[in-house]
Image (cartoon, rainbow, N blue to C red; front, side, top):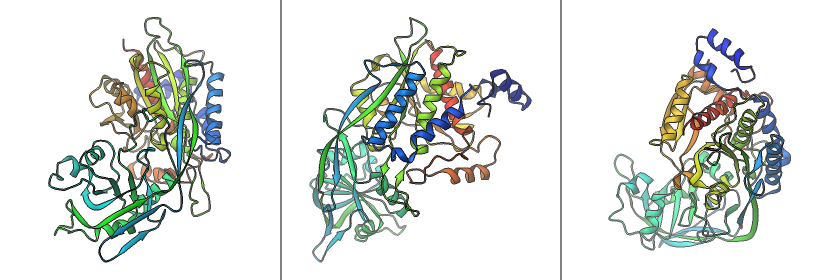
Length: 487
């Protein structure tokens, strides 16, 4: 609300409104966020697909902004090469369900799409289908009596992490992820596109890509598989063998891809703490060009995901390098990551080849939760249920009178690889409470108007209310300042 006011002006207005706590919210230049997001989400960048020319232009733009702010490279250069390989799905890719009476061929991509994977897991599989249900069912041990060796695990929704590892350990040859809701499958199909990217160096550990080959199956194919299951009186389907066998035969054409992370450094002001750093992260890639929408737009501009995050991190860098700003005691690394949309590729590579030692990284603050169109007064902190960083983030929110909830870490954004390596990392997500000055109905309508997650309609609009991004960036800066006050 007070993003472009001088501090004393913000204090007077906040006190007049009866909430002096809001005077603690730092200044963020929302006009800068507006300008950064305008450039990064322009059609000329063609959706910033990982490793494509539009993403290269975005990386150069970010580097140029860092230079303009007087920031240093982290190491010898501003950009870190991330060597990738692309497997492009060919039309001859085949999925079939077979029993003694019939063979049912499904259509790609209308009925199924290969999921993400590595060179080792982007392969075919076959075997009898066994319905295993949800991640919770696998975690509860409900599969103890099921034979999975050399069989295909049929799941409800995609599995990652421990659940997928359990299926691999039990000897499953592959996974079919049933996506029964048409809108959800449509989102997966458009998001995945035809390109599958992974690290050329197979020694780089993945936080996201499964260890088993997997296929995302849409409603028509899902219904065919579930039709052979025994359904309980309450309508539930227990884990059980199905009366189908599966054949998945993919075809790909492969090529090397060069992508880059961008990293900029603000040196800490105190010798005793400047060799340790707080890292602010936002990914700058998006989906590129995919299926056209109802008006023929096929460019997935990614304004909210995640031009908004990049714009906020650059605005925070601008605030910290202002002539009147108090320079942080710790160094600050502004890290703009590639390949998040394709499976956390840039962040996994960074933690394998860190430009700033992980042992001297005191905290990671990740911004990748879209563009709230109103001023949030509640937040969800992912990954910091029990860490000291969580306590600092709570204190920062409490000082402004905001609510905070926490959730466990999941491999759903670029903070997770750091968390996996033992670095305190938080993903800040605007909460679900009504925006400041609005009721629940008004806030819901505003969200619905501007929420175009992973759609071609996620454009930059001059009429978008950037005050929400100003608040989001201000809270991230407040968390950084709270961390900087720690020893």
